[in-house]
Length: 81
Image (cartoon, rainbow, N blue to C red; front, side, top):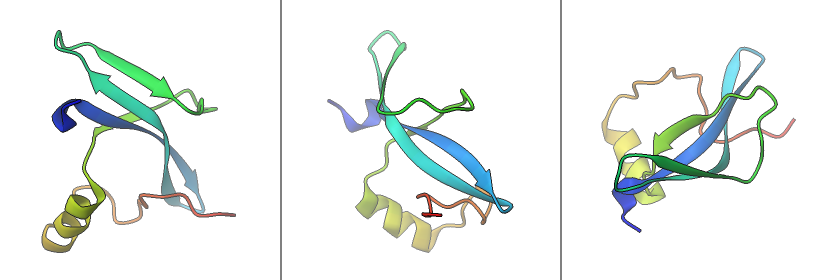
């Protein structure tokens, strides 16, 4: 599978005015442009955010050198309550 065709499915929940990104599955772009989504969990809100897959090593180096476009409050992983 080509990495540029792989995507990650997230649910974004808001608690205490902070956004938490929870990975709930993966998605794959087909040759015809359609997308297959494989969910490990179904969000209560019914809303899923699908983002391009970025390897953790690449993500860590990118976050150090570039300004994030997303809100600074958004966390890549959920915090345990």
